[in-house]
Image (cartoon, rainbow, N blue to C red; front, top):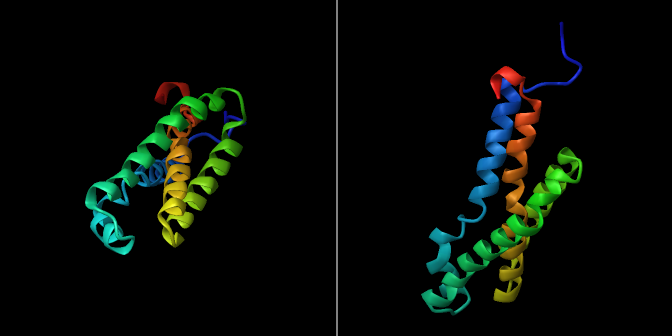
Amino acid sequence: MKSSTPGLSPALVALMSLATGLAVACNYYVQPLLATIAQTFDLSFHQAGFIVTTAQLGYAAGLLLLVPLGDLLERRALIVSMSLLAAGGMVLTALSPTLPLMLLGTALTGLFSVVAQILVPLAATLAAPEKR
């Protein structure tokens, strides 16, 4: 007998895996570009390193403030919203003409990249009990 819930198909597992990997990777894309960013914005390498710190601080804030929303709100809508906001942060970072805007985009990206921590429990609820 078929369940009324959509379940967790192999294609959905692949999509969720890709989304989780990309969300987490967003916090690290800037690292190999630090020397170029430092040169572009006339920063020391140490100053440019603060961009990575900003991403991690945003991520920590997201873990504290946003991940608990996964237990209170509908997860699918939360995942879509957070993914779009993280993408918006990445776009802001990429198009930033100034360091403060880059830091804002990086903080937003880090904040909303915690979507990975909401995708995993959603996958568990979609999986058949014997496959959890």
